Length: 98
Image (cartoon, rainbow, N blue to C red; front, side, top):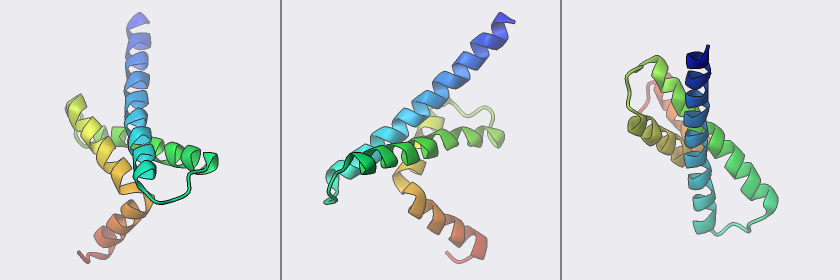
């Protein structure tokens, strides 16, 4: 029972780490942009990129032995691409144009 709880806590800690990577990248992108910063924009970008960073955990379905640093790299790449970048990437993959 304690082993399951410890494993669950490890998964939550990894998800929080991925989210933090995404949030940091999203806010960093805002800080170097020329957009007017509002609380709504900063919080929205943090939530979206944090979610994208957490989505990096899904790669473990295909590569279960991927080390944590690789997962963090994927989280950073997803957060850097953002939603519009991922949409374009998926469109190219689905349509076969690239």
